[in-house]
Each structure stands twice: as C-alpha cells, then as structure tokens.
Image (cartoon, rainbow, N blue to C red; front, side, top):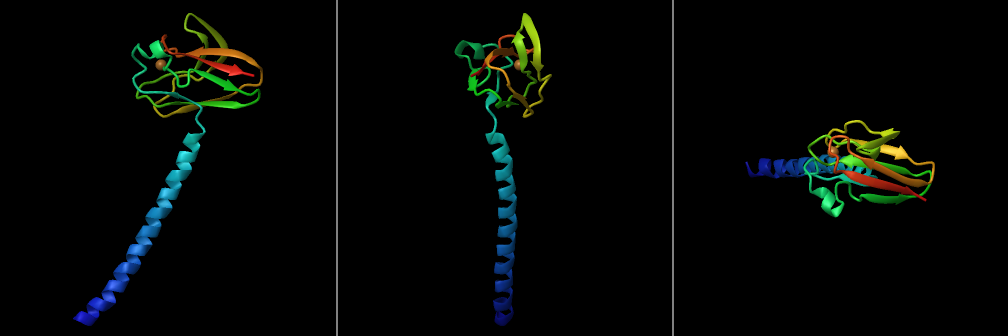
Length: 135
Ligand SMILES: [Cu+2]
C-alpha cells in the first residue's frame, strides 16, 4: 500500500506541473490582451454619462492629447454606457470624424495626418468634450 502511494505521488506532482504550465500559458495570453489595451491613448471613464466630469475636464482622459502628425489616437470606452468620439462641438458638429456609438470596452482609432486642433464631443452627453492637438 505504501509503495503504491510512493508511485502515485510523483504522478500527482507531474500532473500539478502540467496544470501549472497550462495555466501559465493562459496567463501569457492575458498579457497579450493587456498589451493591446496599453495602446489606448484616451479613455472614457466610468460615470461620465452623468454631468460632472466636465468640471475637472475628465470626461475623456486625458481631455487634451498632443500627437505628432501621422500618428494614431485610440480611444476606449471604459464606461458601462454608450459614448462617441465625434468631431466638433455638440451644437456645431463637423463631419471630420465620428466613431458612432461605442459599446462598453469598444475602442476607436483615428490617424491624424494634418496638424491642428481637433475638438470632439460625445453625441449622447453634450458635457463630454475633448481635444486632439496634432503638431
Ligand atoms: Cu457619452
């Protein structure tokens, strides 16, 4: 009986190593996902679907972003509500760009090929305003 146990224990240890390896492999996949999220430049944080974030200019974070000409800017909606990234202002939209409604955790990317100041807002929440400054 004791000899049987002595045989079983190494097998259990070996299996534990295999499972540890498998779960390690999974976590490396998660790291890859995180790398994608690291490329986010601007977030729409939680609770911005109610007024208040505009007081400290935190409806988009950062609300002002400086980028080099030709560079891409990526927004991600970290809120549980829909939001948009739409060029211009709520009462005077321009038709330069419009993300449409972004689902929670959906992202939107845009490449800016011309220098200038690009104001944008959310079509659902007029108090949400941001700026991309292309140098
Ligand atoms: Cu919004």
